[in-house]
Amino acid sequence: MLREKFKKIKIILASGSPRRQQFFKDFDIDFEIRLKEIDEVYPQNLTFLEITDYLAKLKAAAFEGELQENELLITSDTLVWHNNQALGKPKDYNDAFEMLKSLANATHEVITSVCFKTSEKEEIINEITKVTFTTLSDEAIHYYLENYKPFDKAGSYGIQDWIGLTGISKIEGAYTNVVGLPTEKVYQYLLKF
Image (cartoon, rainbow, N blue to C red; front, side):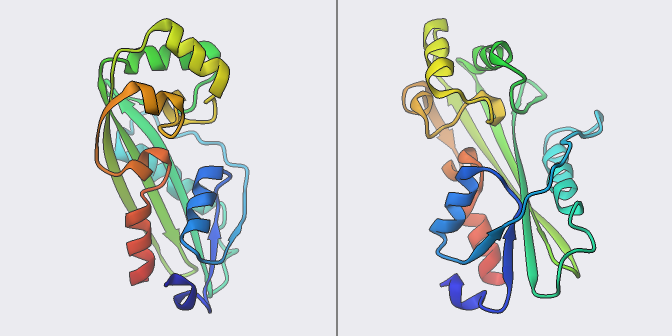
């Protein structure tokens, strides 16, 4: 459906995430991957959606002045929000362990902001999904970290991994958002573009 619509517009996905890239392949549209090294640092006074909005825009800003009239740049950022703080990607094994320990027997929110940028304008959409973990033993957390190495994932887990199958008791909202992209919202945005 989208392939015809975007015949004259080049979609650029600025994401190194294999999961986001796969979602765009699954949309059945042509797109190009363009990556820029971005220092993902945000002002400490930001909270919740402000953080992911800021980082998605920051990633798009790296392409300022480079976009052609027929190009649509898509950037995004996902984080886990738990106990009024942002859990990004873990610094190391111990950090990942502590994150997962804090998520056990609790509900957290996964927030994604997606920025759509052309040479003319910039728009942001958001998605928030609530995820509840069951009890996670230290043994289960160690097993997961050693076998699945989720060190490139916000909150130190991938819902599509073993821990998602065995440790998540409830999800309210978009599953794909927790994987890294609110696909339904992105698709609807592209349909209306």
